[in-house]
Image (cartoon, rainbow, N blue to C red):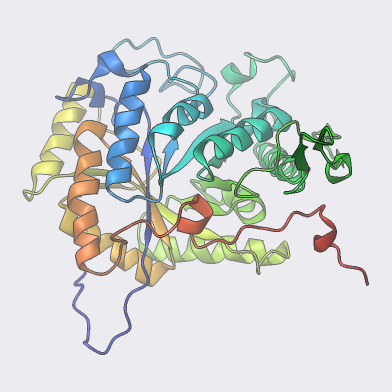
Length: 403
């Protein structure tokens, strides 16, 4: 619902908000690949993904997320739906982000990883490597999966875990990853040719994690990332995911459908975080929306309806869907930012070829006009863009001063 941005001349300047976009195939709508400019023949090329991230960086966005999963896309909960009129298949998110990293300079790169079926040791070194390659712009979007047909790809368990156990496993997964990122102190690498000492072995640490799901000794094989701790993000479509965000994430995505629901979700997550003893640790909470944007009133809704007709059914998302003008979307984001306590938004363009440029060239200038978004990048790292300090290493002596 549009909200006026008129303010008193004496009112304090609004706090700037953060923006990210989700990159997935040709866009969030299943018929997006059939739209003009979608380039379906290039979906599995580095050039395609590099162009998308370059557009997002030109719009000064905080970061992009690369979606991923461990089974073919499907609209059926029981496995492959056998449809041939929709995109099936994708590139690995972490590897795609690593390929794009040298082609970008300031934007954050956050690939998705399914904790349920991947070892935290492997993920820790992959994302640490991405942080080194990007010089401090890496993040990790942690997700879970209880789909039986994904489970059958791996054969680790006789049956999928219950939902609460999936999230508990993911919490442990992130804890192991974070410990491994800290398992090298910042100055562990000596690299002294004269003495022949490359590394100070006293500054590599065993993490010795033992829990219900993992038993990991460490240390990592990859030196500590430039950010110390790359950003961890997680998503909650409902309250089942609040604990994972509250206990493990630096950024949480909330699929709240109006201001009241968003405010309640923010309060609930922060309550869980406080109960876990983490209230003092910074946490960004982002709203999540799928967006269809056009300058002409009514055009975005009409385009969405046409896409639905091509798909043979209405688009049903697990996040709010907005169809309107950039000005109307700016009104909505401003209201949610101000009234619900959301510090930013992750937007899922309905059609990347159309709606990503509409975000960077339509929405961003409107937010800048209102003093709600940056006009240049203020930092070289993703933590810096989000206003988060580089954390101390938990194993370094300075982190444990003598009593």
